[in-house]
Image 1 (cartoon, helix red, strand yellow):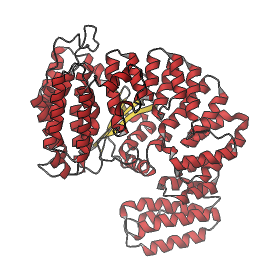
Image 2 (tube, one colour; image 1 turned 30 degrees about the vertical axis):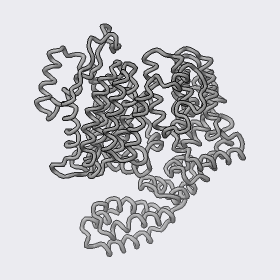
Image 3 (cartoon, one colour; image 1 turned 45 degrees about the horizontal axis):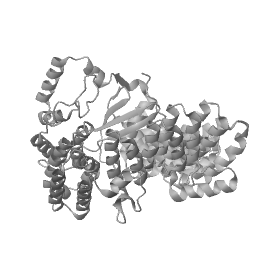
Image 4 (cartoon, helix red, strand yellow; image 1 turned 60 degrees about the vertical axis):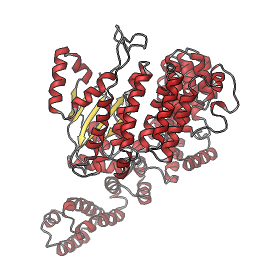
Length: 621
């Protein structure tokens, strides 16, 4: 398997300038532990502000990153500095990555006795692993004779649920993550996330068609969670995340077609009991689940929709739930219809519940290509859904159809590609107003179309997509791709793209600097670093480039950076101050002002002569 690749230019699409700067500082400080790659998964520990290092994991998918995670509490804008640091090392120091086989391959070499011995040895060494194994064991999906997941009909017996072990695991998650016995620190965040993960064991039972087992799992976890909710609130946990994370599971389990009327009433009553334990927002979520379980599959309105009838007001009438909750419930119903092979009912419900992404993809799975393409062109698919849909079309060999649907998505009012200056200005203004530079699916769609069209020799189509990709997510790589595809038309396109960068203050300063320095536009690069906060690394790049053409500016910047460090006696950063002063010296040399430099340096030595850590650095200048 070839090693997944990563271009550090992608960081600006996923992380803030500050996170990128701090990530690079972490690399320089050597706080990133060894990197290990197993197949498409990359892992590493990064020492942060907490006593224990944070764990970073990254899932690749070809040249793209499918998922990332970090155990730190950062939950703001994009990837954290720890993820950035790991990716920087992966991209820039490939020899530092240890390659190991995927865990599944390693375990496949062991026989039953060896696996058993391994688990027992780990259980002796790791506290509470016994509880974790006992909790998870009943929910491992049963397998059919051919090794695939068994269907409900193939299962010899229903899944047995160890409610006691589940409840103990909830308590362990709270105690471990929040460290109540020894105090609470920033690494204690995430207990609710851990509890949601316990509830997600119900998914295995649902996929096996055992809704009753799923309900038993959810009941044990939810009931234990409700008993500790107030304590979690007091220590700052966001308890609303629990029902946000489990509502879809609850909906699908409560909609199990095998439940009797008596069982549905029991669960409606059980949900009512919990409503008294939570605040109004959470109680509203539980009340909605009550409505769902009472609706079941025999609700008259639902029956009409599943038959394909148009019902004014749809399933929810004049009082629909919030869209995100409605979507979760709709998706739960669709999964059940998919699992039970009710294809037409699936399509009818998807349309009625505005699940346009699922509707188009279902048509594709049914090999109704023309209908699927029509849906892709006529239905308002989400950005993520559209990207997934065109990729699926392409993989089926429907190349032209995939390109047409992708172009349609990029021609929508919020992503239209400009074709002349007036339209360019209009669309650029729309991008500013709606914040479209943060829309990764739109950028990924444009990049996907650009690269696939180019591979098929469709240069005009690829060029149009490359222009959109640059305007949605500007980067040096995107700029260079336009240059490659534009051919003889590059001089005209170059001027337009450079004007675009100059005009838009919200584009990342690093991106502007990358392009302007590549084009030797020093004054533009200087103007860019004056607009917003810029990392010291980026500022240094501009100063290095400007030494000969704008030496006075370099001198002023160098002094502005170095003098506060020296005046503030920040000894840990004296080397940084010396680096800035070296640039000032080079700029003085470019001006032919060696005498002025010697006078300035002499004044610094006189002023800071008592700072024994600084003086050797000044003397070396």
